[in-house]
Amino acid sequence: MSTQREQLAEQLAADGHLVDANITDVDLRGLSLEQVEMTGAKLVRCQLDGAIRSAAGAIFIECDLSGIDAREANLCQAVFERCIMSRAQLEQADLLEATINETNLSEAVLSGAMAADARFSDADLSSTDLRRINLRGAALVSTSLAGADLRGTNLSGAQLNGCDLGGADLRQTRIEQASLEGADLQHVKLEETAITLTLCEGAKGAGQCFDGCDLTNCTFAEADLAGASFDGALLFQTSFENADLEKASLRGADARFANFSGADLSGATMDQAKLEEACFEGATLVGTQFNGADAERARFVRADLSSANLSAAQLCYCDFSYAKLHKALLCDANLLHANMHRTDRSEADFGGAHTHGLRDTDPALAAAEDFKPG
Image (cartoon, rainbow, N blue to C red):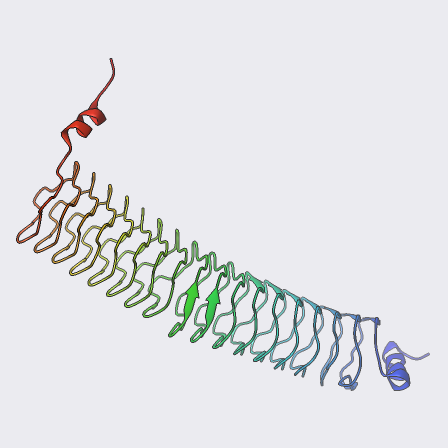
């Protein structure tokens, strides 16, 4: 009586396809599948080697596909569940709307592949070659991209929530309207990278270098960015609400209309930064450096600026209501028409500051605030 493997070999010799085949626990190594049509096939706990070229809609469950040659293969809407695909060759493969769950693709090559709207969950893509792959609209949830090469990749609209991007190469990559919630961004290479209109809430980027990056309209709320560098970065309308930016560097950054409310910027450096109409309401800015910054019309309501250095800063029309400027340096600062209603200015240095039109505590407003009925 012939084995299932022998029966499959006979079938392939007769009609050359495995369309809609249901194959379980069969060692297919050594069988030539390169020209075999596998559309709709279901393979469970099988072992394959060599090459495959057509497996659109096929289902692979717990299969060993290590080193498989699927270059330019049609794997559109294919499903890979708990498979081993380490070192697989998938250059230029069509993975449109494919599903890849709990699958090991470490050290695989997917450069130039089409994976738009694909779904990766708990997959291992560490040290994988993903150059120029199209991941537009793809979901890579809780997936490891540690050390992966993503240069020139299209990640617009992609979801990378909870992904480990540690050490990944994202240079010259465009990420727009994507989601990186809770993603690990430490040690990521980001030169010439544009990440815009992207949700990075709760991201881990302590010590990360974002110098010169375009982060326009991103949301880094609750993110850990302590010691990170944003020198010369474009942060227009970017939100850092309640983020940890302690000792971060934003020298020369363009953070106009940015939101730093509730953020911890203690010991941070914002020298020469563009901060027009930025919001620092309730922020901790103890010892922060604003030397020469342009913060016209910025809001510092209830912010703690104790020992901060705002020397030579442009602070026209800024609102410092209820803020703490204890021991702050405002030498040669331009405070034209700034609002300092109930501001703590104890031991602050205003030497050489331009204070024309500066509004002090409003007695009527203060009386109304202090009024206690009865």
